Image 1 (cartoon, rainbow, N blue to C red):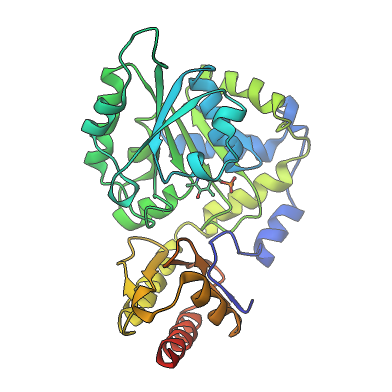
Image 2: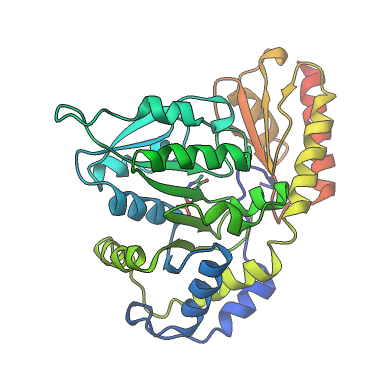
Length: 342
Ligand SMILES: *Cc1c(COP(=O)(O)O)cnc(C)c1O
């Protein structure tokens, strides 16, 4: 594909990032001897207002370790019904942690303190016991939307009232912070565990961090080892993540500008109903064109452009490091041509 808007995971490591990886100082990660990994976990933990952190190959492993930390078999976690952990982790909450999931509905992938109160199970032996609430920031299938800080705080307060643990799925916390101006720290410090990803808007080929209190992260090491996530000279990976932090975080605003521009241009296409993007994801409904999302995706693919069909009539386009302002114009022209031909 010439222009790939399928996801912000489609970036290639840049020459600068590869050079940083090439030059990385390394050691045995499993033995806590890799200096570059140690630098990364310390840097990110402090940015997130957490005591400690652990380096992992993927965000999915980070979410699942968090679930294993907070839930025992037969207990229940509360998450939005569109959340990544519920839909795109191969059933791992049950498959690995033995946890049940209570999916909550709500616009934009958000839910409220009242929703949490309503979802919590009474403490009686016939019910699964509620243990954990997961908040996704930004919401992925919720439209790349940014939880307002006060709504997040009230969900946290409601969960705490019932003694539940809290995990932040911050795969795109970077984008949330960029869009809202709220620091990573202010979002993250109120959670027991926080995961951030380096493979989404940040442009690294792998790497995720799970942060929390020191005793929680100490326990996380057991699960990391158990899942085969302990590594050796992982400084090569961590150097890519540090490079991303230092070079690719501040530029996320470009992706948001590009997403906005795309939404604006698509808004001019008759028959296409476009949602206003909050960050780097543009969602639109193709019903008015008389086309399914899949037909729309296929039509664009013949122009060398990839977007994804995420529902019968819902399409998603994600901007990222390897998408330029000129690419956005090209995509908008191709879409206008397709619409005119229907
Ligand atoms: C991508 C993603 C994950 C999983 O991250 P990987 O690094 O791809 O395993 C978790 N949560 C959300 C919201 C995501 O978008």
